[in-house]
Image (cartoon, rainbow, N blue to C red; front, side, top):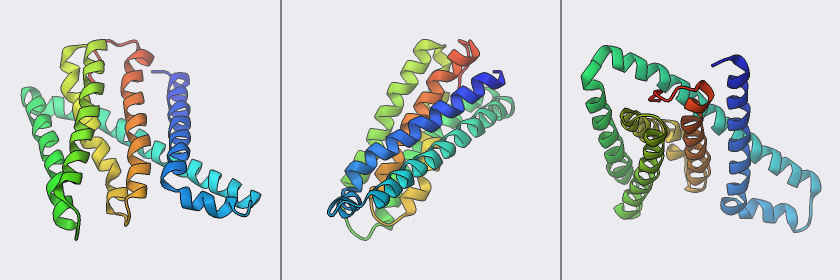
Length: 199
């Protein structure tokens, strides 16, 4: 992939993260907007819009760092574990989903396990769809690496929000992360013109 294509991937992913975070902030941070709209405060509103857009850019950069880190890890795993690499990825996917449910539930002081179970199942469902599309557009062996990236790497990138107090930033971060990760994964083979690219 040449530098022009890399810059295109970087900028479009950056824009996607910024726009999605800004849009989700209208849902999860309604109170913040209400404070600057009643009474109307132009500079505070602009500052709020810039803040959430900037936050989205940060989420996008985290997504891109995770993506390129995974490309390296995937090649390393293929070389080191060879035929065991797909099985190891499946194990790590299962462990990550278990961690999202069990350990988060144990760490919480209140709430039901159903919320954490639903979150993990939603992440898995979205990841399965993206992995299926990736495998359909490239080769069948791309399914497991794509699923691993969407579940495990996205969860690792999501950790700062999972540790934060309150659920608003959890949802504000996961939506752009999932979108940016899916976008990069599905665009990579188009940019490199490599139908066999598994990641």
